[in-house]
Image 1 (tube, rainbow, N blue to C red):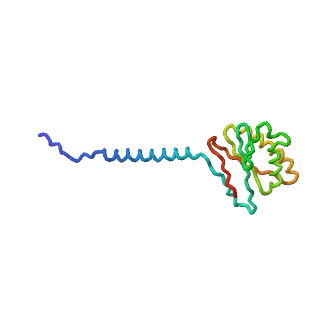
Image 2: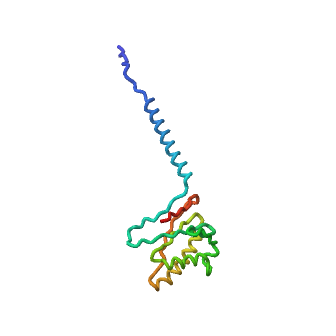
Length: 157
């Protein structure tokens, strides 16, 4: 005698796959939207949040580009070959910072290909700090690598 085959419930995966497809589509849309927004707004705001000291120093920003330095306070461009020359605008800028070394420090924004410009400026500050060490002072610096599409916007206090 042959047994009868029972006709039982056979679940279908169609609802599960459709929900999975919709979820993947929504996540893809969110990721693409975030990417487009981040590409359309490439500028960043740099703010100093150093509140750990009683007398916090104020940052002064300098952009390091492949062929020049840009002093953000005055928007003055200093060509690479003039950075370390006597009486160059950068040396005059450092003299001003030296006078305010207890309340000011320099932050370099280093753009791609601007490393050699930064190194020349950094070497000059190192030489000046050796001279200032005899007086018990020094020029503090910081630096941050920047993407070539970013634009430095400095907030004024």
